[in-house]
Length: 145
Image (cartoon, rainbow, N blue to C red; front, side, top):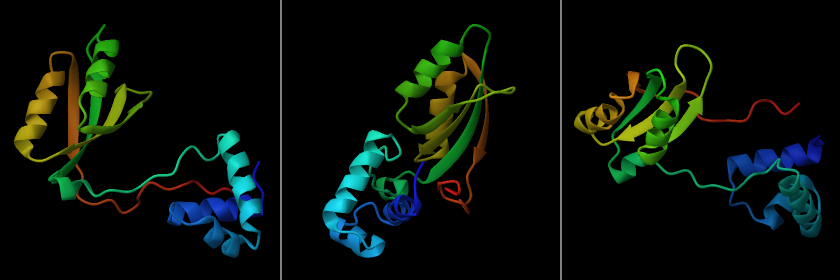
């Protein structure tokens, strides 16, 4: 489990993963070496899995984002998973229960590109696509307490 100080450090890093040890020490009231040790322990326990940068796909020309529900045809599950992994425009994919086996996030530059990429899956799966208009809740942590 994590204590209040660990949760404070995690929250601070979620807000800005580039915060320095000195800044984290000021936020937590600990020394920089103590913060470094806590972060090291959180990493070793798998609580902190990495530090990341958020990039806007639109700055690279990806104007559309889609959520794609994918239902492989009988016997095609592994092939569909392989194809999803091979298409870099799929930026996220979850294997789920229910009628669809995969729910994936796809970034494309145009509707034509969307059609082209989905056509690559159509011989192995049925797809259902929704264009993302807005993301009112960005990816976030569930409550830690």
